[in-house]
Image (cartoon, rainbow, N blue to C red; front, side, top):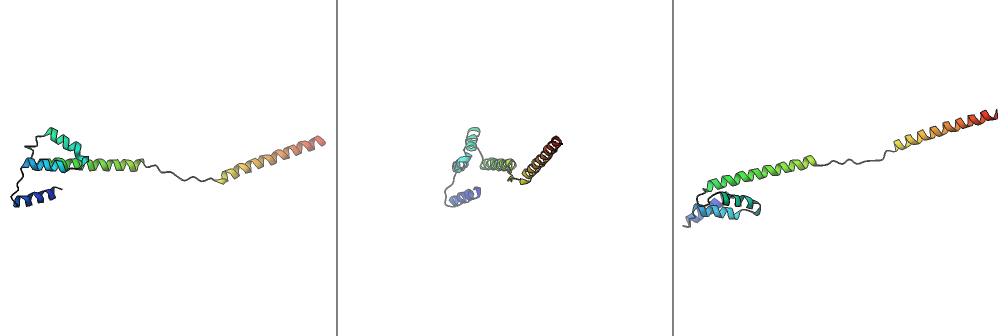
Length: 123
C-alpha cells in the first residue's frame, strides 16, 4: 500500500501538486480498512498528526500488522489443537457371542445338574 501511495504522491509532485506531511498522514489513516479503526483512533489520540513523520506512522502500522498476523496464527494453532477427533464405533458381535456362549454353557451344566438330581431321586 505504501509503495502505491508513494508512486501516486510522486506523480502528483511531478504535476506540481504537493502535499504536506500531515496531509499525507491523514490520507493514509483515512484509507485504512475498518478492522484498523481501533489503531487509527489510538494514533490520532496519542500523537500529534501535524508533527508525526510519515515514516513513524508506517513503522507503527507495520508493527501492528505483524502483531495481528501473529495473533491470527496463534488462534489458528489453537483451533487445530482443539480439534476433536471422533472415532467411528462399531458393534462387535464377539462380545455378544461370548455372553451367549457363557449363558449356554451355564444352562447346559444346570440341566445336567438337574438331570443328575432327578436320577438320584429315582434310585
